[in-house]
Amino acid sequence: MPSVLFALSVCLSAAPQEKSDEGSDRWQLELEIRKQLFRLVDYGVFDYMEFQLAGDNTVILRGQVTTPTLKTNAASAVRRIKEVSKVVNNIEVLPPSPTDDRIRRAAYEAIFSKTGMRRYTHGASQSIHIIVKNGGIALFGVVDSDADRNAAYIAARGIPGTFEIFNNLKVEKN
Image (tube, rainbow, N blue to C red):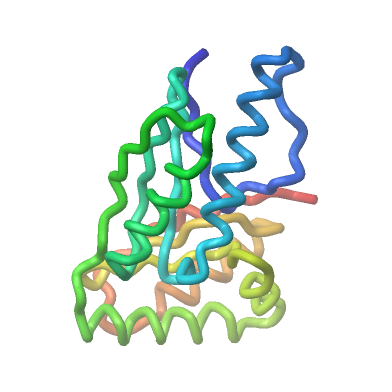
């Protein structure tokens, strides 16, 4: 079975794609990994993590986080799952930067002050994540419509001092 990349913002209620017992076990493991990562108390809107589950139950963590503690806690949480054979932690810790911190705050305010966008800040894990590195902004996560995807991008594009904007938001209609 090929490995698949799973973003944490993917809807947890989706039905498994495979009907076999092996596929069901794999789906349950993927759900457990997501659950453990969602539970991390320091995982927030300025962090983004995703994982890949390899055929031998090796979990490869990727993404960008603002604190070294979150990187360590993510690997520890996944490592505690008994079915996981190995964890490869490729999460990048973003460098501290007062400029990037200013851009993060401005992007948060610009995006979530838009009409109807505040709903993406609620729940166990925010569904829009704002990653800022060296003056560039990348948006990750899931939104309900193309209009929301575009609104977030337009808001981020208006932040002074940014060099580039990447809109990686996915639309998942309910």
